[in-house]
Amino acid sequence: MNDIEFNRNFTGNPGESVKISANIRRILCDNPGPFTFTGTSTFIIGQGEVAVIDPGPEDETHLEALMNALGDERVSHILITHTHADHSPLAERLKAVTGARTYGHGPHGTRSRKASPRADLSVDWKFAPDVRLQHGDTISGPGWMIEAVFTPGHTSNHMSYALKEEKALFCGDHVMAWSTSVIAPPDGKMGQYLDSLRLLLDRDDHVYYPTHGPSPRDPQRLVRGYLAHRRMREEAIVNRLAKGDHDIAAIVKANYPDLDPRLHGAAALSTLAHLEHLITQGRVAAEDAPTLDGRYRLC
Image (cartoon, rainbow, N blue to C red):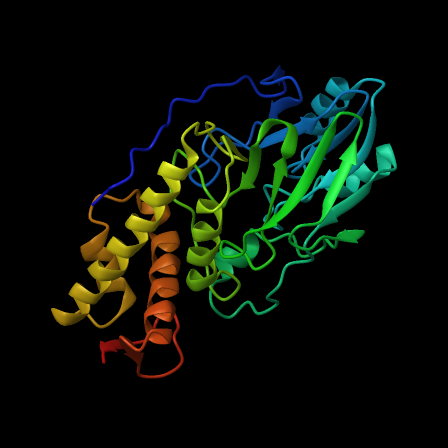
């Protein structure tokens, strides 16, 4: 049931600063896992006066590696794609050390913990940017300019960043080459996510730099694959409902037969997000408010 050609060919030494283009360096955090792949990639943009994208989790060793890579350079901007705990928590420490301001769309959008305690444990509830960016805003430094590209869906505050000099998009968890992105209600919304994918098809970015895994060089093709994959997932859910599976646990068991057990919770959340989207389309109804333990039927 996989229509995307995933690329899991990505290696890196945690803590090592790797120059991947004229304007970009990457430092890999040593936090591998089922949701982070080989770990969180922190990006440094520019030389001399630089921006840092997604400092990463609260990790002393990663902070030391980042500071060693920066040396005498001045950090002018700390950019956050979104407020999951593998992306934003180290921003506070980096800000204290460098004096740079933090930038992002806003704090985490949904305060409710009712839908999924496991999802909420991964949220950085403390982060609030010093500067709130809107779609199309730009920031710049010597030799570089970055445009804010608002891509909600994975989270309601997910912001991507386009480096204009290289037509490169730092896309956080919005589009990744190694895996699909988890859409976790109540903050994650499938309808927003699909709209944000379509937004990228209208852009001319040449390369994406996700915060996890390799960098796709044919990004529009990957985005089209993502859209096709989500359409397939929704039709598979409709098919299970037609066959008499009326709860998320049964749908996940049927539609994800070979899934790593550690990812069953994520699959359930994405299924809930799809069901919410199908409800807005008038194709599915819930007996009550849509929840992980709710019951659903075709309209």
